[in-house]
Structure formats: structure tokens, C-alpha cells
Image (cartoon, rainbow, N blue to C red; front, side, top):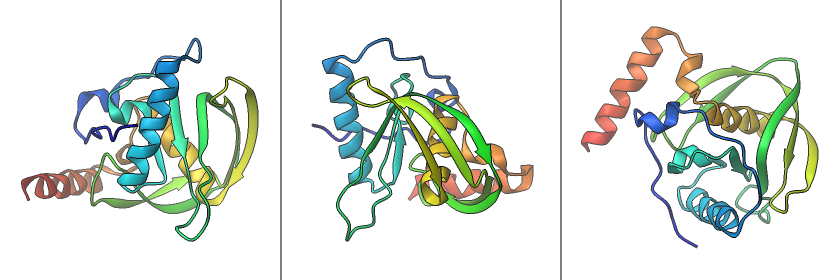
Length: 167
């Protein structure tokens, strides 16, 4: 396994739409393992393939706290099929180091995807898991958390990132 470089905004790959996965290959499984190692090292709770420069519709999430065993979820070709309610969450993103912003999301989601073996599953989620699913799924569509912000907040985030890069 390897720690992959995480693409940081404004890297153009973050705005590209990822392509569906046609089949589970050893290369895809290696990518998933490398993504997990990268996410844990960062540290983060989620990572989409395009955040490491690969345009496959794959993301991973692990919201277990440090004192809990790992609970890695792998989502291949995910589709959010139901949304319910609203919540506001203070989100961070590995592609926006040092930035956290308040974002409005659906309180509950139902997602359909394939797991790492290619087996279809459906998962209902709420709270942090629902937020992470929505956040990572947007990455696969080339959408970013700053797209939920007004123009003034977006400019402030861009300045904050510029300061972070110049350190």
C-alpha cells in the first residue's frame, strides 16, 4: 500500500466528473487500499478517487472515532436514491487543508453502491455518515464544498488556502 498525494483546490481534476467503474480489478482494489492508507494518514473520514487524481466513481468513508475499531465503507458507482430532512454541518475537506465551513445537507440519505467485491448494497445513513456520503459523492461529480458557499465566503476560503500554501 502507498500514501497517495491528495489533490488540493484549485487542482482542475477536482472539477472533473468521475467515470463509472466497469469491473473490479486488482488495480482498483490496490487503489482502494492506497486511498484508505492515504485517508488514515491525512487524517480524514472520507476520500474520493478524484482527490488522488483518479477519475473512477469510488469513495471511501470511515467515521469511527480513534478509540473504536476501523469501520471502512467502500462505495463503487454510488447513487444517492433518497434524501430526507435538512441539517447544517461544519465540514472539512482533505482538498481544502485547514478549512472548515458550515454546509447545509440532507439529514438522512439512502445510497446504493457496490462494495469492494462488486456486491451491490444499499445503506441508509444519518448524521456524520450521511454528511460524508453526500460530500464524497459530490466530489465524484466535480462539485466541492465551496459550491455551497456564497461568493464572499468562497473568496475568504480561497484566501485562506493561499495563505496555507505559502507557509
